[in-house]
Length: 370
Image (cartoon, rainbow, N blue to C red):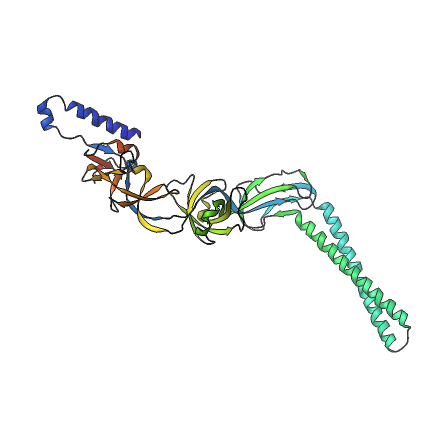
């Protein structure tokens, strides 16, 4: 029970006891009006109720890059820290490239020599073929010229490959982000000596989050790729997020008889972060229906009931319940209420029927009645 509501009920109880002093006092006493804050009421609303499987799990970023060193060397600079927002191709760190630059220069010189040798061999072959056509050289000399040209061209290709590899290593000394995102982890500091494969950074793309979940094999017929899923996420009370099933595993787990599926959730404004717990339901057989929070239903009697506020006075109303949405913890009301009806929730259900009651608007000290 909230502190405000408890105080209101206490005032009401004291006032009622005071009114019992004499029969004449009872005859003229005015019923005590209870004041209640907006947290103690709920309004019956038409909402979307789904009957698909419930999904739950921890959110992860759809794309996560484990950035590792591709070349050995000493880390000269670290340019980004965790939390930094980066564009694709942003430089995160620089590794000493002096030794690699020497290899690159050697490879470039090797290519120049190989190209010169290939050019010479090509000219010699052209000359030999011209002489061969005139019958001025032996066939063996012509074959030797062809063989020398082939060897020179092969050496040229090898030299180009070595230069390309050396260029790739030089480029790798400038550690870049593969795509836009946020730096979530950093494992190096300036002066660290790293080897190929050493972890440097983790970059996540928060634009799309992903939930990996599992459903019983018996419910597989109720889901499909592309089906919408509505979620409640820890840290965002009262808010609903929507995603879609991106993939369904074609095989069930032989031990649990469950099928894993993946849901992708657009993350507008990067509000969601990896690690939050999410629970939702596949929107299968979704329909618009009248619902209330489960906390508004009193199920202690033979029939479920609510305390409706009408004309500023509480009244007990029996209701008929339908399906329950586990993701939002709302119950379908099939009979007894209409959209827009105001009912009491939680501890306020302890107020007796027939009690005058006024509801204060949020941030307003002026009460109002329904």
